Image 1 (cartoon, rainbow, N blue to C red):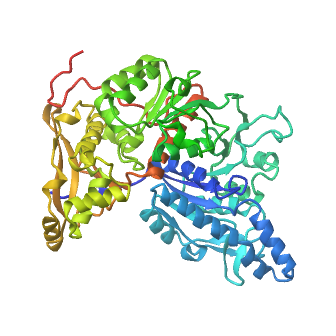
Image 2 (tube, one colour; image 1 turned 30 degrees about the horizontal axis):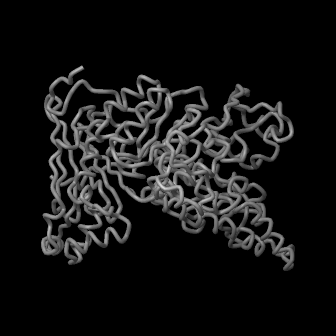
Image 3 (cartoon, rainbow, N blue to C red; image 1 turned 90 degrees about the vertical axis):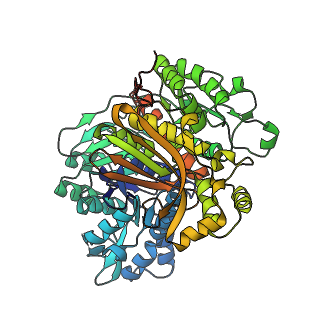
Length: 594
């Protein structure tokens, strides 16, 4: 039966993140902020994002108001002063959308956000919780401008210096969020200014009154008072940090010193996705130290000044880097690089579905032997967090997985539905950058089979190599068939599916079939992927997002890197999404040989 009802995509919780001008210093910082938001979304949280204007922009607007006689007219000045936040919210929404997240940008009037009092130093008073809930139901992240609200008397108001902190606290209280996390340019609240006192110590925990004294303007006092009144947990953290100062009821706790410097990284491959990963790494020099980047043709990089490039694998891997990021492509060659690295205790992140699917067992054994982390979230679904969700749902009994797993196949089938002949549809996919020069892996279902093999391992702990999965080629569907399907209310999709049967036997295939337009997978377009994860109780969890492309895939790779970096910085603790445990069963239910 086609799944149309009882579809759940409920998050584990709700988090409010605030990004101030200290971390949004230029337009380039929105990509780093997007990566920070992505890690909360991939951890299963719905996210409300509150943003300040870019650093210095509000001061410029206030100076502009003063230069034009704004002092006697605070209500008009407030309208000008808030423009930076509106621009910032739109830029953040664009950054998240490029990563493949469903982002919804809202202005204060769209959710009934009201303030009262002095229009230049107002206090928040009302919020349309139903409108906010509706927006969260439709998006991974809802982005709003901080510092400003509507005003019944003056039309608009601002909330005073540091007012974005107050906006974030107010939303966390009204939305019953788990916590509010204030992202600053320091990793918490200190006993003294760490920029001036090298002996300053970071607090792990503070109560509200202590935070009022210790933060010294780092947090708006009105925001601390509002959090105290609601007994809301406030976290103060740096971008990408695992640790934070936790402000809540209870005694003050000084954190123990951590002096780990940047993590040494080797990047092997710098194509479209690898180049996106490189951008992420370079935006965090305090977290990562980059080796020469391995590329096939150094001469082609003559004008690329971002990094040192090399065609020598030994140079790229010199000095035993802590983390190796494999972005080369292929199966056997990359696996032959990753396995000795893992056995040597060096962590590995890859998006290489072919290598992971073919050498799954050997890669995991190498990681186990070396005590290293192996992560490959981007290998299935790109920016869609399907492997993370499978890890979370596994204990509840996943019995089936199906999905539209190949963006190129999706694009070709869409073109067939528009009447294009098959060869022309493939050529257009190549022109658009969706298909490789040799499109057979996408067309004949091999790409989807690689992903399905990994999903079977992760969902059921069962071995089923890609070559043993039945596949159907897209070439079996003509333009006329695709158009006839549309006329009858259906649409062709390349669907990978697997189901766990009695005795651990797995039934799996990559099939091209016409599904009703109401089907949960029917709406996937172009590079979008969609997945349905079915539990033993009949509940179906739906996931969707961009499954291919530079930005969403690079975000998933960098998300793995950050998970490992945070674990490494905290004395090697396991990252949030650890590799699967080996099962003793093969796909046919027989015992695996030792």
